[in-house]
Length: 141
Image 1 (cartoon, one colour):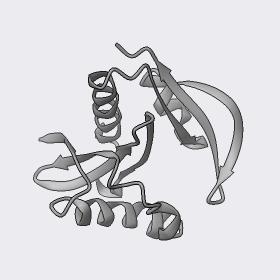
Image 2: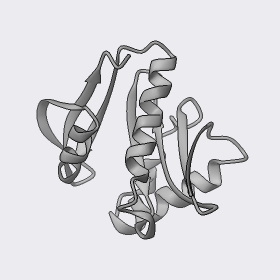
Image 3: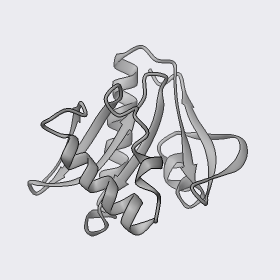
């Protein structure tokens, strides 16, 4: 059973979010936690993916529609959790009458986001030593 919930970065969920992001970004991708935890979490809307009662993934959306920090624990990948989390954030943007969401996709994930209706724009760029490209989804409703 997979459930995706929309939450805030608060006392109830902050540690769960941090644990998932630390496992994926810090431990696996060797990203400095100071780059990941940029001070914007409290103002963002977050999603948590729960698989068989275990917290398995997370992501966030900033108030300007920027989706990011999408992370799924290794043992839960390939089950559609990432797509469900992105689509939950897109739905939240629709509920807020946003006309556009956007993200910086790691190069290997471009196909994943294209399947969810995102289009590439702009030039590739490097962030935390990983190549990215901007992608957006316009007029979601």
